[in-house]
Structure formats: C-alpha cells, structure tokens
Image (cartoon, rainbow over all chains, first blue to last red; front, top):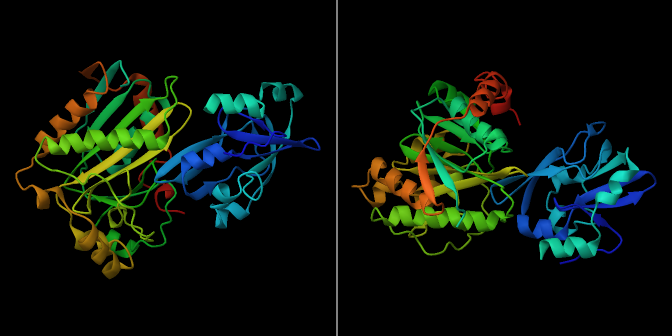
Length: 125
Length: 258
C-alpha cells in the first residue's frame, strides 16, 4: 500500500495536498483497495460550499455506494471531470489522475486535525 | 459477533416508493441494528442508486403498470414480485468493518437460513467475466448466493460514516420473460436470466416464505445478544414522510432520470 509522506490524510480515507491556498484531494490507496473496482463516481458541484466532514459525493463499487466526506471546509473550486468517464482512475492512480476535487479552504486551523502518513498507517493497520 | 439487540421490523406489503423511503430513512437516521422484512404491493422495478435508465423499455413498463423506484444501495435492476426482501442496517458504532467483510457476514447468514430450509448454496462464487447487463440477476457476485452457479439471492450495500445498509432480494418465482421485457435488449437478458439465475421454488418447491423469514430472523439474531420485534421510531417515521414528499414521491424524476 502506497502512502506518500508529503500528503496529509483523514480518518475517512481522503488524502490532501496543500497547493497555493487550495487543497487537492482524493481517496487513499488503502481506500481504493478496500472499495474494489470503482464503477461510478458522483462528484461534488463546483462552487459548492462544504464543511469538514460533510458528505460531498459517492463512489460505487461492488454494488456498494460509499459516501465521500470533505476533508476541509471551504469552496469546491474544481472537480476531476475525467472520473465521469473513467471512474477506474480511482483504482489505477489514486494520488494522481484519480484526484477528486480541489477545495479553496477557509480555515487554516483545520489542517492541524489531519493525519500524517505514519499516523494514518497506524489507524488502518 | 456484534452484540447488543437486533430490532426486527416486519412491514406489510407497501408501494416501492414507501419501501425505499423506509430503507433510506433507516440509513439516514436509524440508530439501532435493524433487520427489516418487507414485500411489495405490486410488481415493481428497482434500480441501483446510480444505474442509468437508458436501457429500460419505458413503454413496456407503463403498459404493464410496473412502477420504477430507485434504491439507496448500488447494483442493477430487480423486478420485485414473489420474493422475500430484506434490509439490514448496522450502525457504525465504533468498530470499522470493511464492506467486503460485512458482505461475507450477510452471505453466511443467508447461506445458513437457506440451508435450514434444505437449500444448499455453492460454497464459493467464481467471478464470471465482466458482463454488462442492466439486470441484477444476470450476474452473480462473490458476496451473493448461487445454486449450481445460478444466482438465487442478490445483495447490495450503502455505506456512510453512520452505518451500513444492506438490501437483499430472494426471489421465489423468477418471471424471466417479464423481467427481460423491462429492457430494450430483452432477448439477451432473457438468455442471461435463463442461464444465470434461479427462483427458489425451482430449487426447493416446498420452501415457504414464512419458514425462510423465520430462519433469517434466527440466523441474523445469532450475530447479536438478543432479538426484539420492534417498531419504527418517531425520527424514522418523520424522515420517511419527508422522503416520500420529496425524492421518493411517485412523481419524482429521481427514480427514472439519470
């Protein structure tokens, strides 16, 4: 299982990367492995205001619909439209082409609640 | 395995809209482990939460007065008629269980309940090459149940931070021609159902719904310390009413748009 050291993580299995006042997010390698073959992704709406921990979308795999939760509060400023046609990117490249959305975060303090790779790895062990 | 009390709800026959609104209310506001056993007031086609409806023959469904309702869980279409249908809600309650683990638990419960009634299912399911079909019973997944390779029970799941909802269908009589006619590709789907699915009465003609339901309650109950036959909570009733006025209203495009 691949867990890049330069990313932060949520207990709900999202990874987050800080980039110029925004947070790029997706699901972790662990999460995609647990889900199995993803066949559909319901993305959040660009422009939507979200709160940390709020449901922002769904993924469907193996006849299971699983909710996705915002890792941080803010505004959704971009979503990965490619996932609509290629949901399998979540499995193939979760930290790259399988990114889900970009959030313009509103509260710097929320970053301190995210987990580093070591802590996340302990949680899922 | 889970401890605590399992609440059992036995509902009268209801419309598809009410059945699915009740399941979603359980998923959204349910607070206790619940096994719900229910049936359908009329033949109803349910679609998976994100299933596309382009493959449906709407003219046929309208002519036959078969309503369409969308499930909160994933998967593909099921024509609900002469069957035992259940939902099982398990609040998250601290312990994290993967969806595959929980599928395995539900599969084992159903396997035992069927065995109690003389129906021996296959020990394992070998995945067939991926088949694109809009019909649930065209393909058996490893977490489902089959007899001689033919599917006899379909199970799907929805997961949130609050808990897991399973919905399952165990058809007693599978009307393959009618089921297949709900889709444009009816000949292909009829053949898939003929080769890949069985109604339980084709396996065990003496099986009754009452006996299967009793076995399911007993076997699900073994996962808990005790079983109680309960009622819907006020919160669940209110959420059901709210959903029935909104996305689960019979006229709601939620059911067929996508």
